[in-house]
Length: 249
Image 1: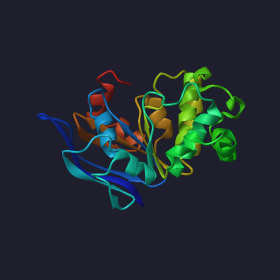
Image 2: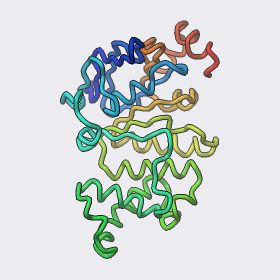
Image 3: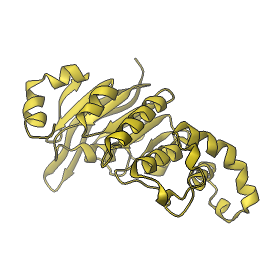
């Protein structure tokens, strides 16, 4: 078993309130690992700590054998640790192709690419179309992002993150606000993506978690309540009381 992301004693305190308290988390390379729990459990705070959008009060974060505890989000993204957000983050007035092309330009790290000619930027088109095909959006390649359904916007966001060549992808509630058809489409997409990179996701939809996850970590009141596969954690009396019993099924 190879651990690609590890948190040791991860803690975040806000004026005496411990949103995350001494969390030890290990994510195995090549797995789909879910982080779940009732509202107020500390999932989002933990996720933001791992992706460096928050700095921990104490504890250590190791990614691919490297201490990233004090790194900035852009630094860890360049190492291959890439995240999505709860709200779809696409450029609505750009086409699907242009959105993914922006990500490819960003990977080069040269902001002046935005001032290049259209002819120069077309060198990215083939690779962009490849990532668009990966997420099943080929027929929408010339559509404005604003014209896409919510589920397809999330798929476009994943295509853009794939363009950054992540070795680990962190998904923040990828199914939030989706229809059942979109949930099925994005679940299939996550399975395909997991063949090439490790995935850690925060997700409220328990059926999605049950169907997708290799391992689940349950948080409650900022601490780990249970960990294991879905069958194991779903039978835990503590989990039933704190998560399912609280009306979050």
